Amino acid sequence: MAKTWFITGSSRGFGREWADAALERGDHVAATARDISHLNPLVERYGDAVLPLRLDVTDRAAVHAAAQRTHAHFGSLDIAVNNAGYGHFGMVEELTEDELRAQMETNFLGAVWVTQAVLPLMRAQRSGRILQVTSEGGVRAFPGIGAYHASKWALEGLSESLAQEVAAFGIHITNVEPGPYATDWLARGARHSERHPDYAEVHEATAVDFEVGDPRATRDAILRIVDAERPPLRIFLGKSFTDVADLYEERLKTWREWQPVSLAAFG
Image (tube, rainbow, N blue to C red; front, side, top):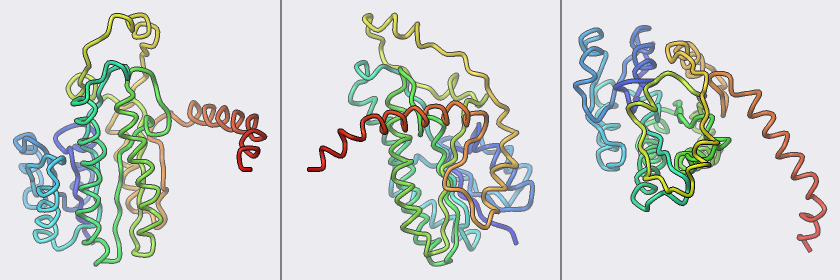
């Protein structure tokens, strides 16, 4: 039986790959983007199986309307993918209030609005999958991108609570944590704070060249996640595991070293 997907940020990158993968196997997709002209190739190829929707995820009312329209159009809403977002680059001291608020409005609150919009539909069905695209940056952090990490760590925490709240309704939550991929995320979607001269050496010292994966290679993984009877709460895409595992071992080591202080603080 065909499933109905609701995918934000479908114009390019992961959203476009996963929309195409779902449609290719016969599912239905409500594909959202700020500029729906970018969705024309999907419509031309898959016809009525695609519902293109113009959507800014920061507009809560529009998000709810889009979810309702999807359900009315296809008769169900089975899989929601919170993919829309961007990365803001800037040291914490360099961030303006507007920059930080905009990052949280899109990456965090936008995902919350979508989640809240689809949950009543999924509860009524007693089934559903919500994929939160958080990133490797949702469980670790690098200098110069603190605003982005804040938005993704917030979504990780909210989603862990959510998973426990909705399990009885047959709804499963998965935090999808991609590492670096060739999605034009840096070239087209990123924003930058004005640099403070005192951080020039920090910027230079912390610049990293990442090995990037092929976003097309993620298609099968996403299909396997949404089809799984018991999908994971968290899953990496790419080669992040070893580095993150080492980081968590270091965290455990620190917590153990300071455990006597922790217990003494209990009283």
